Image 1 (cartoon, rainbow, N blue to C red):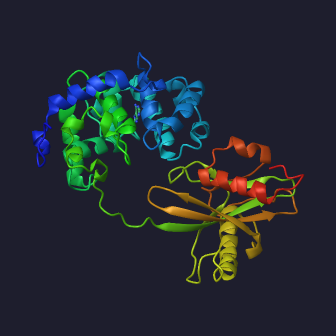
Image 2 (cartoon, rainbow, N blue to C red; image 1 turned 90 degrees about the vertical axis):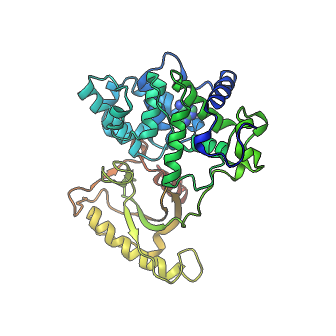
Image 3 (spheres, protein in one colour; image 1 turned 30 degrees about the vertical axis):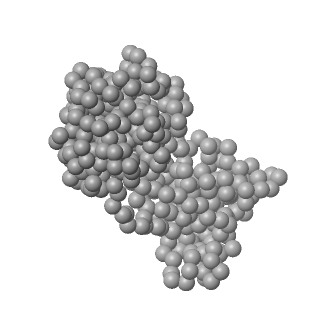
Length: 395
Ligand code: ADE
């Protein structure tokens, strides 16, 4: 073992780490579509944006479809936001797509389409933080820039047996500093990808495969006999929860009423079935024996008001209209969407939202799939299809 327990990050054996990792990477590099040489900066940027909160296996088909639809940065910059969101549909964290689109327009306008090659310039683009700037600069432009994401934090926290919560501000500073000191001059791209691959395939969160790890002789967590107890995490507060009531409203011709989310908020620009947040009183949640009846009556009254305000439709929603629930988790909160299904007897009544910023429209069933829907609205569409399971239901 090269590093005695108790060694600090400052004593870290940089050269041994670099050479062991680069040597391992030669034989163990993953073949991924965005690694094809020569590297196109646009492809690197796209991959890093998609990979920010999504696993490699999920990203690959999205990455390939995206490049068929938007083969160049210019074609992305020229595309309407709705098309961009449609290509992103299902990947989640849609601000990534909106920012990427805006940043592409900025690069075309300000840099004549040439993606900037320094970390400082990249950091000025919407959606690019320190990790993504370091990844683009090192992978696409061979700049000696470090990276730090979840995988890299885990590897570095383990080899150093970092005792504090790895997300604390002091740990983040120390880990960035170590990552920067580790970058071998002239080989940052290769080294950073080696760190990513080691974190994803060997130094995995639950069952690290230390038997094949090139860093095992340097790893203090391994020497202590408990690699999986790193990185240290302070206990997190429970994620808050919100109840949302949603109306799936069909007119007499089968058209469905859809609302567009405000462009600047969460899931901005995506389409959803209209509704909004509701307050449940203390009588128990719907779905529990004591809460079911009174909660749904109260929720129906609240949803009726919301639908009148957001669409102008003078509907009366009743507790019997609620036909199911859809749950979804975001990073900082969870939601339960309580779904009412309402069938109107007239064709497409006029919709006039009380707020000019709200966009609502009737959509033919076969055209719902052309809109970029949120993940939970896709689940609601499935729920409605099952609930309306009838020979002449067009959904
Ligand atoms: N995760 C983030 N960026 C990545 C990349 N370029 N290759 C593999 N996994 C990644």
